[in-house]
Image (cartoon, rainbow, N blue to C red):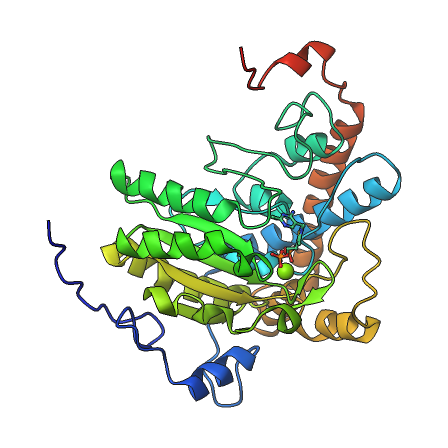
Length: 366
Ligand SMILES: Cc1ncc(C[n+]2csc(CCOP(=O)(O)OP(=O)(O)O)c2C)c(N)n1
Ligand SMILES: [Mg+2]
């Protein structure tokens, strides 16, 4: 049966959508290079007090959780791999704040922040890191392999790029089951060079699947800078050959993430097929806990921390605009620290899984 000709929706952000025409190169480059509003550009207003505090609290929870996980790893309490999300908090917190409850989430191994943002109990996440029975995967999955259908979190994937076709499948399920959900499929700049990503783009566009591809461009794939590995380093343009529109976003600004996320989700939920958001972000720590990060200078990291930290940026605005005083923010910090301490306690005192668990949750070829 012949497919109806696709109507060209107007692309969020004002560019051309699925017509195949990219936004003018010059404009795209300029936008991509930018972080934060330039002089004369409209500043995104803070949302209401509850929402703003919640964004602040969520980012801080991820930050403190990850710092604690890093410490516990250093003490030998966490084995295996452990990839921290510190620096990237605005991406997942911003998007989570504008998605609908039925929208599934899937990501890579750098997944603790996504789980916390999905509302998964920090105790269960920390206990999984320490390999205990109270962990989300009963202590058998570790840092990279946790799931919660209840919270719409589908992993936690250690194979670079593998979550992209799976996230596309989740989008297919939303469409097939008519949930009106959008699959939030996160992957990194390095993963963006995997072939399976483009097979996914093609199918998603052909079948108009409700999927938001979120590229967390933290500038490095292990020790390789994005420009050394990517012939087209403007990753938001990677869907052009498939008519998948894309947009660059300041991923260090939770308000910019929210705004772009809301627009993109509306566009996708409106039946217009997939979209890509390239979140320009930065990871402060090494690729994993065993990476001394010698491929970049301390100055580079310090500059990002000093000038673009997502939590500090929001804090400054809240203080400057009289939404909060230091005492109110300290109180949030205290609450968050208590949650993280409780999780760390639990993760150390919980028993190890019973040996009989070796035979559960595994596929056995009879
Ligand atoms: C198929 C595959 N190839 C290589 C690896 C090894 N590896 C693990 S993480 C990684 C880098 C991925 O970088 P990126 O997608 O930018 O994500 P980030 O770690 O920055 O979040 C590589 C090459 C892997 N796990 N799977
Ligand atoms: Mg990366």
